[in-house]
Length: 298
Image (cartoon, rainbow, N blue to C red; front, top):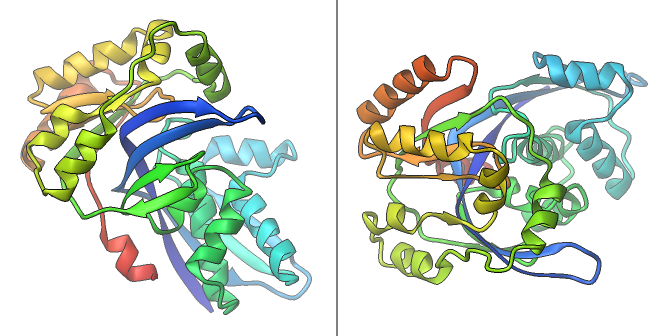
């Protein structure tokens, strides 16, 4: 038997840091949206005793495996084994498109797709709530990625409220060739005297009223100040997107990826080509908001 899953990237339309727990985890209020940009995963039954085998076209992930490091796909499979008491003999094939370490939850999306895929392949009959609970042990973004769509995410990201769909904005993402440490970004954020707080409530109101034109104006990310201060290319990319007729542009997650929203697919595609010419070493994709994922896997 073969099962196919798609792991969709996410962006943060709004990300506000509201506090910190005693255990050091930061409390957030985020509005997250899945994109059409995705990784493809294929799950196939293997011979008894073969265990979990991952094959990927990603040089980075292959290097991690060769060095003995388990990525989130393997960790998700092992977490599901522990939770259910099953031992999985499975071949997992990953086609990687989401940029790695980009603020787009690529690893979390792969982990969530693994939970869904193995649940289907081995007919485990776990509910979405059960998969989200297992996913939380792997990372704060995994519960959202189990179903995706448009959500208000609170707590450390695990308290999810599904929101009314927005228009499927054409979106361009641009990841520069640099690495951002999420723990370091949050640590630096804690030292800010006057941190920026986006208006999450205004965004929620615009979503509830299906006020599409208001959404680009309300984009905001509390962490951008920190990352952009260290990496000025963040602001440069945003300005480049605005010059290509983006309605607005902002950083996703802790960075370094910047995304811009556009009025049409044609404008987004044209903008992506301009950005690729200007930044030939960056990872750039023209994509759009996606919602079909929810109906397919409920």
